[in-house]
Image 1: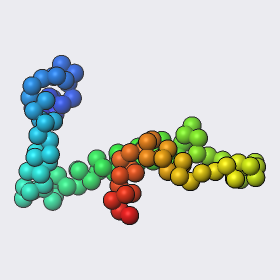
Image 2 (image 1 turned 180 degrees about the horizontal axis):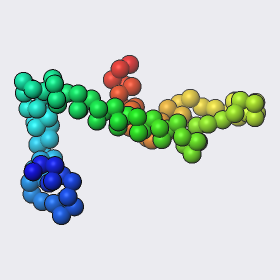
Image 3 (image 1 turned 135 degrees about the vertical axis):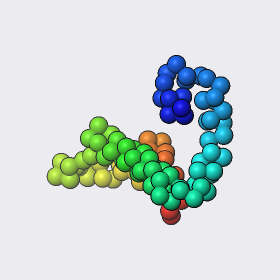
Image 4 (image 1 turned 180 degrees about the vertical axis):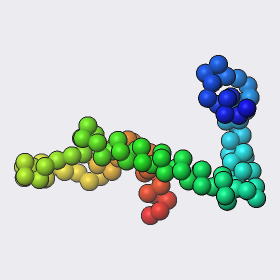
Length: 106
């Protein structure tokens, strides 16, 4: 029932879906405190988190992201113009969940 509510476009604005999202923190907490959570919920939650971080990192590591360069073709001026702070700001914007995790871990 819940999966249908959350995956069907026809229920996208349904009041039950709105309520589920409004109380999602409480729902997740209740799931995590359930005795079966260590065997089912927690591993599933970790898989979702890993997938989310991996997706952001794949976008960041893709050639289209603008972060790739070839050392053999890099000029001295390009190296001098490199700004680590600017890079960090761009990473924060393009990978907000990953950036948040890094902040938590550091």
